[in-house]
Image 1 (cartoon, rainbow, N blue to C red):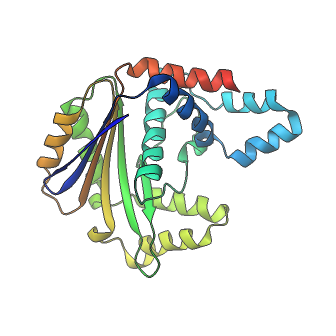
Image 2 (cartoon, helix red, strand yellow):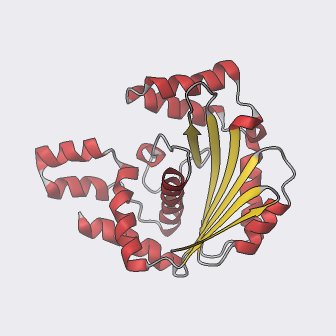
Image 3 (tube, rainbow, N blue to C red):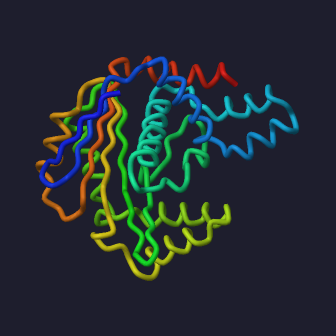
Length: 245
């Protein structure tokens, strides 16, 4: 994969191209199930009922709609990018809590957190756009979403993450989120925005213009992942998950 980085208007732009499809499909298909179900849950079903039924449990969670698959995979790729390539952590894989596999999740697409001992936590609010062709209206839609709640993550989204972390026993991070939302507030210095696009066309010019036009006070980061055979790539990834068990 080729990675092109630029600084535009003081903000960060990264374009990812040249994806090696066979290897990428295998690699991504291996992590997709973890976004729909906890590994411990799958392991428990496997231990009780065997591999075939554990695989069926995962298959029942996978969307079949092209548009929902596109959105879900965009969110998965964005989350994996954040965890692998930034200092932030996507603490909760929210696709595990979908109301129905053929429905999109409501609210902020991604919220990631960076904690440093002795300092206030920092939050990355992300908007994901997965399209065959990313266009200017899509970019404008993303900017509008990032501006909501005065640029901060929504209270509902933060409470959702804190609740899930508390249930998992990560009380320290849950408390840090509660303190930021309910006690101390989130200052602009604790905030960064991410626009992550997953598309078949090269979004370089659109994302560069997006950053150049920004006049706010929140740090901005734009990442464009370009896969020329966008729809086939999505179809192949989910097909691999289903057949690999």
